[in-house]
Image (cartoon, rainbow, N blue to C red; front, side, top):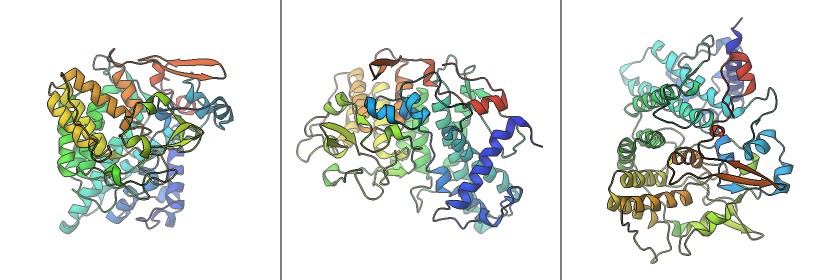
Length: 462
């Protein structure tokens, strides 16, 4: 019998196996479907491993979405909040101390650890497979894919279930379990936040040289995707030089921007296919409270902050009953996009340039992006009187560009460390005011109760 401390991970395996066999994507051949016994799910060829690591249902549709629930990107009416069908949506929206029902499976945790398990299965079994010389490139790519997906999964888990990074306390702050093997007998324990980020960076850096420069599908990682994701990680850590370096590496490989003058949005999306800016495509898990629908209303002050000739105001939003509803998602199937795109990288680059004392460079970088967002013939280049002025302008545009992607939650966590940018979030539901102050413990979501009871891991304080 397996140790009880690992039962939850076994549940993840069973669910992941079911998910793979019932929702195989276009690049799979139902390898697992032919092996109904869970103990026989042992890949034995490169093709088997490729099928595992190319499972879009596992790796591209299950990024944690809890953080986005807690952001100031949107609000809902009293009637909508009361009518929400899940405790997670209702309690998460008001940053309640108790978020889940007792014993509830929390997919933001379990499905993301499914990604970790799949990646570890590939990494554990790859050395056991004989690889010929003409197969080496494929083997390297498979390993790079697995490392990328594991690093990305650990990062999104850290953003959701641990406190924001603080260099003074990261060595002792509780992070997440770092499962580095597919062995189900390994006990799950919480590593430090510092150890978690060290692992994320190690995985992503190792993936870069193994991944191809281009891929046939945007759901598969490339070198530009890995460098772009590293830029995101370093920005969360406040390492602006490395965030800038990685943004430059990614943009040197892929820098395409979309001219918003040619977009013709529909009611719920801005394109019927992948956008040219999309480097790596994945989406957040769905939570009804902030899906692309007529439930969540975009913050009205944010909507009013767009200039008249800024096309994002008309492209990103549709108006119903006088309220703005967001449709500017980079996923044409209406899910909340969480991938790596060039607009994010230009904003990362501009912010880092401003923070490193290069305001002119920051404005030039920002201009490159913003020139594609304004009506033709109306764009006026940005100017800054100082590095601080440049930083404020970049952060303002970041706020208006990167909505509903899960990035706002990370931005709130990191920017709250600076009194200049710290804000208190507020919701009013049925006459009751709820607040989330800067640096509050609730910036770490609770670990699922069933995971705590099975592993005896310490719970996050709320």
